[in-house]
Image (tube, rainbow, N blue to C red; front, side, top):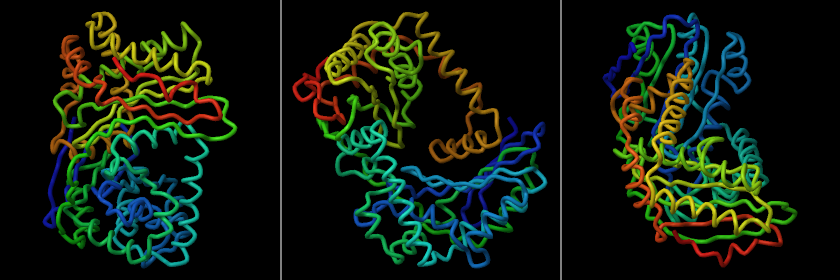
Length: 420
Protein backbone atom coordinates (compact mmCIF):
# COMPACT_ATOMS: atom_id res chain seq x y z
CA UNK A 1 0.00 0.00 0.00
CA UNK A 2 1.64 3.20 -1.24
CA UNK A 3 -0.08 5.83 0.91
CA UNK A 4 1.03 9.27 2.04
CA UNK A 5 -0.35 12.10 4.11
CA UNK A 6 0.67 15.76 4.07
CA UNK A 7 -0.63 18.77 5.96
CA UNK A 8 -0.57 22.02 3.99
CA UNK A 9 0.38 25.40 5.46
CA UNK A 10 -3.25 26.39 6.04
CA UNK A 11 -4.04 23.16 7.91
CA UNK A 12 -5.60 21.27 4.99
CA UNK A 13 -4.72 17.55 5.02
CA UNK A 14 -4.03 15.72 1.74
CA UNK A 15 -4.04 11.89 1.63
CA UNK A 16 -2.95 9.96 -1.45
CA UNK A 17 -2.74 6.33 -2.53
CA UNK A 18 -0.97 5.24 -5.70
CA UNK A 19 -2.70 2.51 -7.75
CA UNK A 20 -0.48 2.38 -10.88
CA UNK A 21 -2.29 -0.53 -12.56
CA UNK A 22 -5.41 1.59 -13.14
CA UNK A 23 -6.21 4.45 -15.54
CA UNK A 24 -8.77 6.19 -13.32
CA UNK A 25 -8.35 8.65 -10.46
CA UNK A 26 -10.84 9.48 -7.72
CA UNK A 27 -10.59 12.71 -5.76
CA UNK A 28 -12.71 13.62 -2.76
CA UNK A 29 -13.08 16.81 -0.77
CA UNK A 30 -14.34 15.89 2.69
CA UNK A 31 -15.65 18.56 5.06
CA UNK A 32 -16.28 17.63 8.69
CA UNK A 33 -19.55 19.52 9.08
CA UNK A 34 -22.42 17.09 8.58
CA UNK A 35 -25.88 17.35 10.12
CA UNK A 36 -24.51 16.68 13.61
CA UNK A 37 -23.02 20.18 13.68
CA UNK A 38 -26.24 22.05 12.92
CA UNK A 39 -27.90 24.24 15.50
CA UNK A 40 -31.54 23.56 16.33
CA UNK A 41 -32.91 26.37 14.17
CA UNK A 42 -31.19 25.26 10.96
CA UNK A 43 -31.71 21.50 10.78
CA UNK A 44 -30.93 20.34 7.24
CA UNK A 45 -28.64 23.23 6.32
CA UNK A 46 -25.54 21.07 5.72
CA UNK A 47 -27.50 18.92 3.23
CA UNK A 48 -28.96 22.06 1.64
CA UNK A 49 -25.46 23.45 1.12
CA UNK A 50 -24.32 20.18 -0.48
CA UNK A 51 -27.07 20.63 -3.09
CA UNK A 52 -26.42 24.33 -3.60
CA UNK A 53 -22.69 24.04 -4.27
CA UNK A 54 -23.51 22.50 -7.65
CA UNK A 55 -25.84 25.37 -8.57
CA UNK A 56 -23.31 28.00 -9.51
CA UNK A 57 -19.92 29.52 -8.73
CA UNK A 58 -18.35 32.88 -9.46
CA UNK A 59 -17.23 31.59 -12.85
CA UNK A 60 -19.63 28.72 -13.67
CA UNK A 61 -23.39 28.25 -13.83
CA UNK A 62 -25.06 24.98 -12.82
CA UNK A 63 -25.18 23.90 -16.48
CA UNK A 64 -21.51 24.85 -16.93
CA UNK A 65 -20.59 22.49 -14.07
CA UNK A 66 -22.60 19.64 -15.60
CA UNK A 67 -21.12 20.21 -19.06
CA UNK A 68 -17.58 20.43 -17.64
CA UNK A 69 -17.60 16.98 -16.06
CA UNK A 70 -19.34 15.43 -19.10
CA UNK A 71 -16.70 16.92 -21.39
CA UNK A 72 -14.06 14.61 -19.88
CA UNK A 73 -16.34 11.58 -19.44
CA UNK A 74 -16.07 11.81 -15.68
CA UNK A 75 -18.39 11.39 -12.71
CA UNK A 76 -19.18 14.12 -10.21
CA UNK A 77 -21.35 13.84 -7.12
CA UNK A 78 -21.72 14.58 -3.42
CA UNK A 79 -23.41 13.35 -0.27
CA UNK A 80 -24.14 14.48 3.26
CA UNK A 81 -23.62 12.28 6.30
CA UNK A 82 -24.15 13.09 9.95
CA UNK A 83 -20.48 13.77 10.66
CA UNK A 84 -19.14 14.92 7.29
CA UNK A 85 -20.00 16.02 3.75
CA UNK A 86 -18.21 14.64 0.70
CA UNK A 87 -17.72 16.04 -2.82
CA UNK A 88 -16.01 13.72 -5.27
CA UNK A 89 -15.04 13.20 -8.88
CA UNK A 90 -13.79 10.19 -10.83
CA UNK A 91 -11.89 10.83 -14.06
CA UNK A 92 -9.19 9.40 -16.27
CA UNK A 93 -5.73 10.00 -14.79
CA UNK A 94 -4.89 12.56 -17.48
CA UNK A 95 -7.78 14.75 -16.28
CA UNK A 96 -6.72 14.96 -12.63
CA UNK A 97 -5.71 18.66 -12.83
CA UNK A 98 -9.07 19.47 -14.39
CA UNK A 99 -10.92 17.58 -11.61
CA UNK A 100 -8.95 19.47 -8.96
CA UNK A 101 -9.82 22.82 -10.52
CA UNK A 102 -13.50 21.93 -10.91
CA UNK A 103 -13.93 20.65 -7.35
CA UNK A 104 -12.06 23.62 -5.91
CA UNK A 105 -14.33 26.00 -7.81
CA UNK A 106 -17.45 24.22 -6.54
CA UNK A 107 -16.31 24.05 -2.90
CA UNK A 108 -14.54 27.41 -2.61
CA UNK A 109 -16.55 29.77 -4.83
CA UNK A 110 -20.30 29.11 -4.52
CA UNK A 111 -22.68 32.03 -5.03
CA UNK A 112 -25.87 30.50 -3.57
CA UNK A 113 -28.20 32.16 -6.12
CA UNK A 114 -31.62 32.99 -4.65
CA UNK A 115 -33.46 31.45 -7.61
CA UNK A 116 -31.51 28.21 -7.18
CA UNK A 117 -32.22 28.14 -3.44
CA UNK A 118 -35.94 28.25 -4.15
CA UNK A 119 -35.70 25.53 -6.78
CA UNK A 120 -33.41 23.29 -4.73
CA UNK A 121 -35.58 23.67 -1.63
CA UNK A 122 -38.39 22.03 -3.61
CA UNK A 123 -36.01 19.26 -4.73
CA UNK A 124 -35.21 18.55 -1.08
CA UNK A 125 -38.92 18.49 -0.25
CA UNK A 126 -39.29 15.74 -2.86
CA UNK A 127 -36.30 13.90 -1.36
CA UNK A 128 -38.04 13.99 2.03
CA UNK A 129 -41.25 12.76 0.37
CA UNK A 130 -39.34 9.77 -0.99
CA UNK A 131 -38.44 8.72 2.55
CA UNK A 132 -42.02 9.29 3.71
CA UNK A 133 -43.20 6.99 0.93
CA UNK A 134 -40.66 4.29 1.87
CA UNK A 135 -41.71 2.71 5.18
CA UNK A 136 -38.49 0.69 5.37
CA UNK A 137 -36.43 3.92 5.38
CA UNK A 138 -38.90 5.91 7.46
CA UNK A 139 -39.11 3.40 10.31
CA UNK A 140 -35.33 3.53 10.68
CA UNK A 141 -35.39 7.34 10.84
CA UNK A 142 -38.11 7.13 13.49
CA UNK A 143 -35.99 4.66 15.46
CA UNK A 144 -32.96 6.97 15.62
CA UNK A 145 -35.15 9.97 16.36
CA UNK A 146 -36.61 8.18 19.38
CA UNK A 147 -33.42 6.42 20.45
CA UNK A 148 -31.27 9.57 20.46
CA UNK A 149 -34.12 11.94 21.21
CA UNK A 150 -33.15 15.61 21.22
CA UNK A 151 -29.65 15.00 19.81
CA UNK A 152 -28.51 15.95 16.28
CA UNK A 153 -27.51 12.33 15.58
CA UNK A 154 -31.17 11.42 15.96
CA UNK A 155 -32.37 13.90 13.36
CA UNK A 156 -32.81 13.12 9.66
CA UNK A 157 -29.91 14.40 7.58
CA UNK A 158 -32.21 16.19 5.13
CA UNK A 159 -34.09 17.89 7.94
CA UNK A 160 -37.87 18.18 7.86
CA UNK A 161 -40.05 20.16 5.49
CA UNK A 162 -40.65 22.65 8.27
CA UNK A 163 -36.95 23.10 9.12
CA UNK A 164 -35.85 23.32 5.48
CA UNK A 165 -38.58 25.89 4.74
CA UNK A 166 -37.13 28.10 7.49
CA UNK A 167 -33.53 28.07 6.21
CA UNK A 168 -32.55 31.43 4.78
CA UNK A 169 -29.70 32.43 2.53
CA UNK A 170 -28.10 34.07 5.58
CA UNK A 171 -28.21 30.70 7.40
CA UNK A 172 -26.56 29.01 4.42
CA UNK A 173 -23.78 31.59 4.06
CA UNK A 174 -23.07 31.66 7.80
CA UNK A 175 -22.85 27.87 8.11
CA UNK A 176 -20.68 27.67 4.99
CA UNK A 177 -18.20 30.34 6.15
CA UNK A 178 -17.96 28.88 9.66
CA UNK A 179 -17.38 25.27 8.64
CA UNK A 180 -15.85 25.11 5.17
CA UNK A 181 -12.36 25.85 6.43
CA UNK A 182 -8.97 24.19 5.99
CA UNK A 183 -8.83 22.54 9.41
CA UNK A 184 -12.21 20.97 8.76
CA UNK A 185 -11.29 19.76 5.28
CA UNK A 186 -9.51 16.70 3.97
CA UNK A 187 -8.62 15.89 0.38
CA UNK A 188 -8.16 12.23 -0.51
CA UNK A 189 -7.00 10.96 -3.90
CA UNK A 190 -6.52 7.40 -5.12
CA UNK A 191 -5.54 6.01 -8.51
CA UNK A 192 -2.80 6.31 -11.10
CA UNK A 193 -1.14 9.33 -9.52
CA UNK A 194 2.13 10.62 -8.13
CA UNK A 195 2.16 11.93 -4.58
CA UNK A 196 4.07 15.19 -5.32
CA UNK A 197 1.75 15.99 -8.24
CA UNK A 198 -1.36 15.73 -6.06
CA UNK A 199 0.25 17.80 -3.31
CA UNK A 200 1.17 20.50 -5.83
CA UNK A 201 -2.39 20.55 -7.19
CA UNK A 202 -3.82 20.80 -3.67
CA UNK A 203 -1.53 23.73 -2.91
CA UNK A 204 -2.43 25.45 -6.18
CA UNK A 205 -6.19 25.16 -5.86
CA UNK A 206 -6.87 25.06 -2.10
CA UNK A 207 -4.20 27.31 -0.56
CA UNK A 208 -6.75 30.18 -0.42
CA UNK A 209 -8.96 28.17 1.95
CA UNK A 210 -9.02 29.92 5.33
CA UNK A 211 -7.51 27.96 8.23
CA UNK A 212 -10.47 28.36 10.59
CA UNK A 213 -11.19 26.34 13.72
CA UNK A 214 -12.04 22.63 13.93
CA UNK A 215 -15.72 21.87 14.38
CA UNK A 216 -16.90 20.74 17.80
CA UNK A 217 -19.07 17.58 17.67
CA UNK A 218 -20.61 18.39 21.04
CA UNK A 219 -21.62 15.86 23.67
CA UNK A 220 -22.51 12.28 22.77
CA UNK A 221 -26.21 11.37 22.66
CA UNK A 222 -28.08 9.91 25.62
CA UNK A 223 -30.12 6.78 24.93
CA UNK A 224 -33.88 7.10 25.39
CA UNK A 225 -35.39 3.60 25.20
CA UNK A 226 -38.92 3.80 23.86
CA UNK A 227 -41.75 2.19 21.94
CA UNK A 228 -43.18 4.22 19.05
CA UNK A 229 -45.82 2.77 16.72
CA UNK A 230 -47.08 5.03 13.98
CA UNK A 231 -50.02 4.58 11.66
CA UNK A 232 -49.83 4.86 7.89
CA UNK A 233 -52.83 3.96 5.77
CA UNK A 234 -52.84 1.38 2.99
CA UNK A 235 -49.92 -0.68 4.28
CA UNK A 236 -50.00 -4.44 3.82
CA UNK A 237 -47.01 -5.01 6.10
CA UNK A 238 -45.83 -3.79 9.47
CA UNK A 239 -42.32 -2.37 9.26
CA UNK A 240 -40.40 -2.92 12.48
CA UNK A 241 -37.11 -1.81 14.01
CA UNK A 242 -35.84 -3.33 17.25
CA UNK A 243 -32.52 -2.08 18.50
CA UNK A 244 -30.10 -1.25 21.25
CA UNK A 245 -26.94 0.67 22.03
CA UNK A 246 -23.58 -0.57 20.71
CA UNK A 247 -19.89 0.51 20.66
CA UNK A 248 -18.88 3.54 18.61
CA UNK A 249 -16.93 3.62 15.37
CA UNK A 250 -13.64 4.21 17.17
CA UNK A 251 -14.22 1.79 20.05
CA UNK A 252 -11.80 -1.05 20.65
CA UNK A 253 -14.87 -3.30 20.31
CA UNK A 254 -15.64 -2.16 16.75
CA UNK A 255 -14.56 -5.44 15.18
CA UNK A 256 -16.47 -7.43 17.79
CA UNK A 257 -19.71 -5.54 17.13
CA UNK A 258 -19.37 -6.09 13.39
CA UNK A 259 -19.04 -9.82 13.98
CA UNK A 260 -21.93 -9.89 16.43
CA UNK A 261 -24.17 -8.04 13.97
CA UNK A 262 -23.08 -10.29 11.11
CA UNK A 263 -23.86 -13.45 13.05
CA UNK A 264 -27.22 -12.02 14.07
CA UNK A 265 -28.47 -10.65 10.75
CA UNK A 266 -25.66 -9.87 8.34
CA UNK A 267 -26.39 -12.22 5.46
CA UNK A 268 -28.40 -15.13 4.12
CA UNK A 269 -26.71 -17.56 6.53
CA UNK A 270 -27.34 -15.31 9.55
CA UNK A 271 -29.51 -16.43 12.44
CA UNK A 272 -32.37 -14.02 11.77
CA UNK A 273 -32.55 -14.81 8.06
CA UNK A 274 -32.38 -18.56 8.52
CA UNK A 275 -34.69 -18.89 11.53
CA UNK A 276 -37.31 -16.26 10.74
CA UNK A 277 -37.43 -16.20 6.95
CA UNK A 278 -36.14 -19.58 5.79
CA UNK A 279 -37.55 -21.86 8.50
CA UNK A 280 -40.78 -20.02 9.32
CA UNK A 281 -41.48 -17.88 6.26
CA UNK A 282 -42.61 -14.94 8.40
CA UNK A 283 -40.72 -12.22 6.51
CA UNK A 284 -39.25 -11.43 3.13
CA UNK A 285 -36.67 -8.97 4.44
CA UNK A 286 -34.89 -9.09 7.80
CA UNK A 287 -31.42 -7.92 8.72
CA UNK A 288 -29.34 -6.17 11.36
CA UNK A 289 -27.77 -2.78 10.71
CA UNK A 290 -25.10 -0.75 12.53
CA UNK A 291 -25.32 3.04 12.89
CA UNK A 292 -21.84 3.95 14.06
CA UNK A 293 -20.44 7.39 14.83
CA UNK A 294 -17.45 8.90 16.60
CA UNK A 295 -18.90 8.55 20.11
CA UNK A 296 -22.13 6.58 19.70
CA UNK A 297 -23.56 3.50 18.09
CA UNK A 298 -26.82 1.63 17.60
CA UNK A 299 -27.50 -1.92 16.47
CA UNK A 300 -30.89 -2.07 14.75
CA UNK A 301 -32.80 -5.08 13.42
CA UNK A 302 -35.29 -4.38 10.63
CA UNK A 303 -38.13 -6.69 9.60
CA UNK A 304 -41.18 -6.33 7.38
CA UNK A 305 -44.04 -8.74 8.10
CA UNK A 306 -47.81 -9.24 8.08
CA UNK A 307 -49.71 -7.80 11.07
CA UNK A 308 -50.62 -11.25 12.31
CA UNK A 309 -46.94 -12.25 12.46
CA UNK A 310 -45.49 -9.06 13.95
CA UNK A 311 -45.50 -10.15 17.61
CA UNK A 312 -43.99 -13.53 16.72
CA UNK A 313 -41.22 -11.88 14.69
CA UNK A 314 -40.29 -9.54 17.55
CA UNK A 315 -40.32 -12.43 20.02
CA UNK A 316 -37.98 -14.41 17.76
CA UNK A 317 -35.62 -11.44 17.40
CA UNK A 318 -35.51 -11.05 21.18
CA UNK A 319 -34.85 -14.78 21.48
CA UNK A 320 -31.77 -14.42 19.28
CA UNK A 321 -30.61 -11.51 21.43
CA UNK A 322 -30.96 -13.81 24.41
CA UNK A 323 -29.11 -16.68 22.72
CA UNK A 324 -26.15 -14.42 21.97
CA UNK A 325 -26.10 -13.33 25.62
CA UNK A 326 -26.22 -16.84 27.00
CA UNK A 327 -24.25 -19.04 24.62
CA UNK A 328 -20.91 -18.85 22.86
CA UNK A 329 -21.13 -18.60 19.08
CA UNK A 330 -19.92 -21.98 17.72
CA UNK A 331 -16.47 -21.78 16.12
CA UNK A 332 -17.73 -22.82 12.68
CA UNK A 333 -20.36 -20.08 12.68
CA UNK A 334 -17.92 -17.46 13.97
CA UNK A 335 -15.31 -18.39 11.37
CA UNK A 336 -17.91 -18.22 8.60
CA UNK A 337 -18.87 -14.75 9.76
CA UNK A 338 -15.23 -13.65 9.85
CA UNK A 339 -14.68 -14.84 6.28
CA UNK A 340 -17.87 -13.10 5.20
CA UNK A 341 -16.75 -9.77 6.64
CA UNK A 342 -13.18 -10.10 5.35
CA UNK A 343 -14.45 -10.88 1.88
CA UNK A 344 -16.75 -7.86 1.96
CA UNK A 345 -13.91 -5.61 3.09
CA UNK A 346 -11.53 -6.81 0.37
CA UNK A 347 -14.13 -6.67 -2.41
CA UNK A 348 -15.18 -3.18 -1.35
CA UNK A 349 -11.66 -1.82 -1.91
CA UNK A 350 -11.15 -2.75 -5.54
CA UNK A 351 -11.96 0.64 -7.11
CA UNK A 352 -10.29 4.03 -6.90
CA UNK A 353 -13.46 5.60 -5.49
CA UNK A 354 -13.70 3.09 -2.66
CA UNK A 355 -9.99 3.46 -1.82
CA UNK A 356 -10.34 7.24 -1.84
CA UNK A 357 -13.29 6.97 0.56
CA UNK A 358 -11.44 4.49 2.76
CA UNK A 359 -8.45 6.84 3.06
CA UNK A 360 -10.63 9.75 4.10
CA UNK A 361 -12.66 7.85 6.67
CA UNK A 362 -9.54 6.42 8.30
CA UNK A 363 -8.05 9.86 8.75
CA UNK A 364 -11.31 11.44 9.91
CA UNK A 365 -11.90 8.84 12.62
CA UNK A 366 -8.49 7.37 13.46
CA UNK A 367 -5.95 9.93 12.33
CA UNK A 368 -3.87 7.23 10.64
CA UNK A 369 -3.92 4.63 7.87
CA UNK A 370 -4.60 0.98 8.63
CA UNK A 371 -3.14 -1.55 6.25
CA UNK A 372 -5.61 -4.12 4.95
CA UNK A 373 -3.63 -6.83 6.71
CA UNK A 374 -4.12 -5.05 10.05
CA UNK A 375 -7.88 -4.95 9.55
CA UNK A 376 -8.08 -8.61 8.54
CA UNK A 377 -5.94 -9.66 11.49
CA UNK A 378 -8.12 -7.64 13.88
CA UNK A 379 -11.19 -9.47 12.59
CA UNK A 380 -9.49 -12.84 13.00
CA UNK A 381 -8.49 -12.06 16.60
CA UNK A 382 -12.06 -11.64 17.84
CA UNK A 383 -13.02 -14.51 20.17
CA UNK A 384 -16.42 -16.05 20.81
CA UNK A 385 -16.10 -15.04 24.46
CA UNK A 386 -15.71 -11.39 23.40
CA UNK A 387 -18.86 -11.60 21.28
CA UNK A 388 -20.80 -12.99 24.25
CA UNK A 389 -19.37 -10.36 26.60
CA UNK A 390 -20.50 -7.61 24.26
CA UNK A 391 -23.92 -9.22 23.75
CA UNK A 392 -24.42 -9.24 27.53
CA UNK A 393 -23.61 -5.53 27.63
CA UNK A 394 -25.83 -4.30 24.81
CA UNK A 395 -28.81 -6.66 24.85
CA UNK A 396 -30.10 -5.14 28.06
CA UNK A 397 -33.81 -4.31 28.49
CA UNK A 398 -32.90 -0.82 29.70
CA UNK A 399 -31.65 0.02 26.18
CA UNK A 400 -34.15 -1.83 23.97
CA UNK A 401 -36.23 0.34 21.65
CA UNK A 402 -38.99 -0.67 19.23
CA UNK A 403 -40.43 1.44 16.45
CA UNK A 404 -42.96 0.37 13.85
CA UNK A 405 -45.07 1.71 11.01
CA UNK A 406 -48.38 -0.08 10.68
CA UNK A 407 -51.75 0.23 9.01
CA UNK A 408 -54.97 -0.39 10.93
CA UNK A 409 -53.61 -3.47 12.74
CA UNK A 410 -50.39 -3.06 14.74
CA UNK A 411 -50.16 -6.78 15.51
CA UNK A 412 -50.07 -6.50 19.34
CA UNK A 413 -46.78 -4.59 19.23
CA UNK A 414 -48.11 -2.06 21.74
CA UNK A 415 -48.16 -4.68 24.49
CA UNK A 416 -45.28 -7.03 23.72
CA UNK A 417 -42.64 -7.12 26.46
CA UNK A 418 -39.19 -5.97 25.39
CA UNK A 419 -37.11 -8.28 27.50
CA UNK A 420 -34.26 -10.71 27.06
